[in-house]
Figure 1 (cartoon, helix red, strand yellow):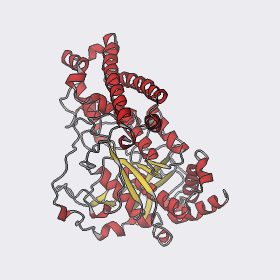
Figure 2 (cartoon, rainbow, N blue to C red):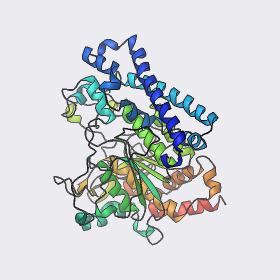
Figure 3 (tube, rainbow, N blue to C red):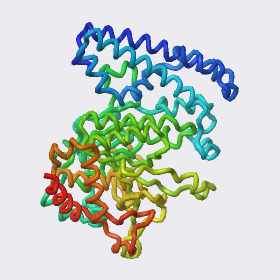
Length: 476
């Protein structure tokens, strides 16, 4: 956006930013002054928060880059116009946004997870103060450095045959689709921990994305920190996507680091960050979104963002989550969440079992699960600069979302929707969901009716392509 702003308007926006920053920190102080939970903060923590403008570098910049995304098109329009009325509207809205997010920041200091005792015992959380844990959840401990890889070594890693011959491709009935399409012309946003930009698998497969985990400037300024995945998760999920739709393009949107931001003790900001990633993806041309995380409908920023993607006809594929860590005494009820319904395509998991395909029992059950894709023994590619890791078969419903998104990419590429369909809020998302659920297979899973692990059944990519073609014909 910066290139579209005249120097004169840029100076006016800089003044607005400085004013909003002052309002933000002043409001934080006012809220804490009479806050009923203030005593939970230690004296040093309270002093640091009250002096955050000096003591916590770039806190305002880090939070506002997320806050700004929802209404970024409107802010950009005001800035491009640059007339007094538009600048005044920009000013009023941005000051109000700063005030709102000051309250959210204070609230995040007192919101801890249901699994607090367990999560505070994890190595990356252990021994840290409340404020340190909140700042860690905002990304202050995330790595943003660039690995030292000589240019002649870029895109030279070998992709093992296991990747292209893996069972997940055939379980989803994908290969019969490839003479029709491999996903060409479709941009899929992978909202995750980033991507390995040096990996041969992703050569010519990445379009510009965004790294939210480093910010030192106003949200409308150009600042492009490196898109490096230091957590492996985003790279692995992106590789699962390309296993199904090898010709689609990936828009990496980095909203967590897959490391220090995992299992946050104070968990508010991860939902804000994911919501911002959804808005960014929709605003910047993604046609499908893969998000390998549960999206609780009780988190309003998430619900609003998911509804926006649905309204804009960008199918959002998410995963159900894993039943995990029972050895630590964690209860399933603490892992179950109120799932969204029509706003997302919620994928459960299946696995191979004695030569058959069966529901994956580690899937967190939900009545709202739509379909299922493989979640165990899925071969993924890892970053080439993570020398202690190697390409391998892994498990988790994190894989369900990108595999589902890969199939949706095939549908979009094989039968592009008309503008008439796309103009109707949610219409294309409904057609995609219908194509997936109506052709999903239960018999292959040994089931006769939908359940809370696999939904309508295992996705049939080829059947879905045939059905959406017919459904779209009926809309012409």
